[in-house]
Image (cartoon, rainbow, N blue to C red; front, side, top):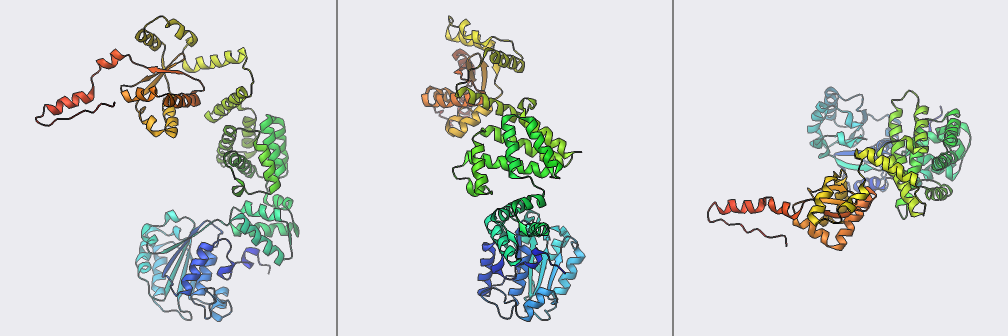
Length: 539
């Protein structure tokens, strides 16, 4: 009978395990020093070698002729464990044996000495599936097991393991296997099977498998079933993923706002039985690559693709702003989440692509920020804003604020008044700035000290002025320093897209008329007796 690749090439010794040196080296060193722990906990994502290492460890601690920490795989013990004829090594699936009674049976059995081997080994897979009662029943035996017992627990969800169990085990973390390591392993197995596997196809299989060796070998098995010469086209057809050319075409269509072209490509992919959820995932991954290219100096090591595809992605990334890319990723992730509840995944995908090609159809914050970013870029590049555009923007502003105020004339009507009268006149048409807290957060990123002076303040917009409502002298001390003032103005412009003149919301008389809580507190404490409090001025 044919044996599938992931079973046929399951590691027999620690040296065969791919991409987990932090585990295999540790275990080999312990075995060489005869420091066998009574309980191990292997944790990591699926297909990374947890169960394989557990079986290798069970052989290594019982092997009659170990070689540098590895089992010899030749003695009767090693061969018996491999073919399952030795009953001293027990593998338990906690998903189906998760009750208290199952654990009690295990504990009763563990009291007996092993028949052939030195240690009786219990491998409990998916141990997080045990009930709380089962965990409690295992606790005492796990803490003080008989000398001939070794427990090896394996789980993909470490957060579900009680702390009392974690503290009694030696924990070893398995990482996702790197694409380079996994692709080399695939090439090695393909050579053993006399199969032609291109380097690009091996990388594609490894990337699709997301660091899972079992998935990678299963996919390679399917590809071999189609053709002994495995290429990227064979891999894409077998895995049901779109070609890189299709992803580039959809991305170009989104940039060109060519809805027809994008929908046509999606239709062709759907006709060839491509999974729409997988397409959505691939498109999001492509925009992630663009995002990394635009935000990092050396993104290559984090982007899994061929050199040719990477160069094309770099060229394509120059067309987009970072705000656009973030908006696209958010939209695609939302779509992917809805697809599991949708009647038709194709419709969900098409609606999202239409929104990406026509941002005016989308009223989300991310979409609006993306459009504003494009306007800013156009202005920086010398594009002139027409009167029609200004009128449109003014109408939108009026609708948002529900005020029909000609803000451009406010400053003119106050030009002949005193400072306090001018301030009162400005306040008549002032409206509360809803984004003031966001401005403070921006200031905090630049200077936490300056932002602290603005905590608890409010801001009002009146024409070209931004009036700050505060009773603290330190706030205006910060504003008097030119460097701070420019920082604050720039942060305000980043949030609002407009430059404002800064000023106080209250007049000096109004501030002086208010009671000073510190002075009042000082009087109350002084009235208690001999205790006095000195209030230090901010100056």
